Image (cartoon, rainbow, N blue to C red):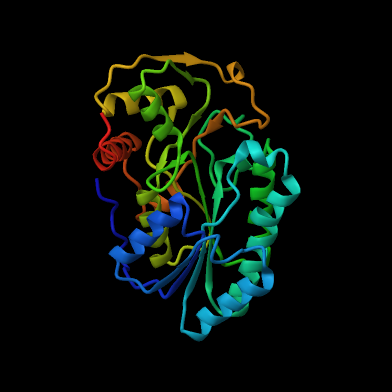
Length: 300
């Protein structure tokens, strides 16, 4: 299912993409190439975003080359690991984005930052909207919320995209782990009391660029349509793979965890939808991802 095009399609580049080696970064590179955009993509190894002097110089160079947009897809995303290294994670997820946003604004460039459902505590019974009060439960969530605030303070016209349950090519993720375990014949015990909006990185990347072409500013939620529990998502992975592995539902407290996770991570994307940006249903994209992994990796 294709994402509807916004009526005002224009070039967004030249673009400086930071965090190009991650799952979303990989998808953004593919989306930029598909649009014929000019871009420079830097991985963590090529640019340490916590090195303020080097990062600011890179952004200044983009401005001199008639650049338009800086997209920050770099982040510390190890939720468990963040509990033991919050000060270090804060530098990556909060201080660095604020500095990058300030440098972009000073150079006259648009700034795009990616955030997360983990800024919420998950106690709401309905999908979260952009104006709901954040209340993170974990070190990861706290640092990402601090990053949001730092970015918007430095560049009030920045585009802030919150997303959830991200998966896609270019990295390990929940459906990839489920697929591998199912193929190996392992017992699948999956949490059934956490719900969210699974988001496929190729869809997310296209949606971000469409928001840019629509001149979106401020905070937007962007995820695939619909919601499910982790248990339902695991069932969908097994079904898409044509496997018969049984999946058993369990509660979140079955597994020990350092980090608390929101029980409800479902994001309302109505604000983006009003701009004509809507991602496909989560089941369709998950099926596409599973079949792609099986084809490219010759699984089963």
